[in-house]
Amino acid sequence: MFSGISPHFRPRRHLLTATQYRTEMIIRFAIWDQITGTTGLPAAA
Image (cartoon, helix red, strand yellow):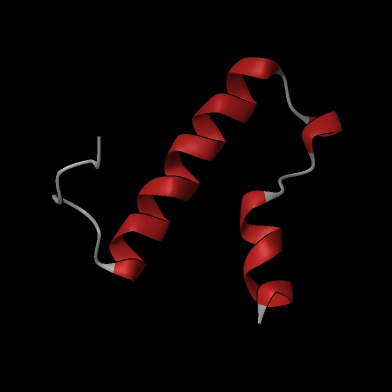
């Protein structure tokens, strides 16, 4: 199961600048939050 999810969080970093990498990861985590239904839930402290 992990092999289907892992590539989503492993962009080809050597092809991106640091700013591009950060932006891409923000987008990918937002997509993940929508898929898992965690958007809008309070963060655990």
